[in-house]
Image (cartoon, rainbow, N blue to C red):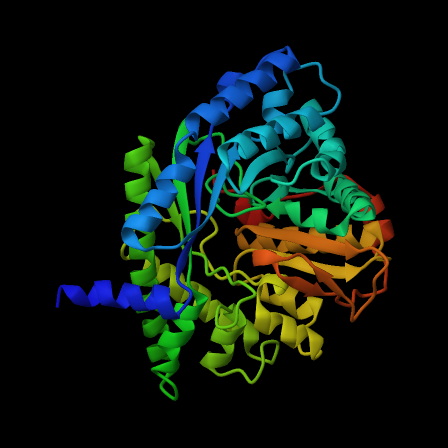
Length: 447
């Protein structure tokens, strides 16, 4: 009986694409703040390279010793807009280059935290950081950026929403692929290990290890065993499977934290798909009973999946956090891509699905001539869903310069490829131009 869980895990790794998607070290940069920007950047470089000097080595040791694939090693830092604001620097590209240099030196895959939190308004560092994003992403390959424009408690900063539509268009004009390194959030969380939205929250410890797990293939295979049975059985099967997957994530995270002498933070339970066949959230929904993802009932099936994954995970791990749910990035899910190509899945349907899952309109390519106002409208819609439902939502959209509906953008690797999707041609420009602040909902008032 004791060997059964071990055998189950071996099978999940070997046959069902189970992996640790990321080990992410969060690092506080508050002790790097300096009125001299050059000194601050040197402190940042020294802090990152010292804190994470053994991160890759330890992850590779664990992978070798236990046979558990660890796909990405990442770092998340305190939002740079908060750290750099004390300096007299007028743009923050140099901070992104410092992050890039440190990440390259350490051999980590990505580093997040070129970020700003503007849900209730701007401070001077926020404006400078947002203005620096296009150049920062153009000159780096590992740096990820995020901006939080809304929250349930604060409402939505419509000025920032409007500005970021133009920011995304500027990034795309240089290279659309760089847009995948920018996420616009509402209700961004402090302990997210997944990129591009990861940053080290202000209430976190000086250093921490967070783990992101993934296993759509495992859930799909488990549901094959209960075909034709009631939806209650389906929910229970997902919960049992999430229990097994989360147990592995907690095991790996605890070992990594101990060896790095860093506190263990959270396990993020998210089902994160890849372009590999059999590693698809859309296939899970179809196994539940949909002819094709996008059919009527898709949102209900996704809500069931999301809830059951969380219930199964929290039974085994007392430190669950991050985004924890089912991701639906179009470019990173082979069956999602097929559904879009066949005309079964639209941006409007994806938006409805984001009300019940993690995290939002993710890795979606739109025609290159999509207006900045339309992109801002998409951001505003997702922020509103997050604000009203008290959940994280986000937009990571890629205007495909020179391309139109039916064309395809290639990202490579885990990021896959994205068919260019139709955007409603009616413009929200007058709405976005109003600017100002969308008030928080009445249920936010809980003092």
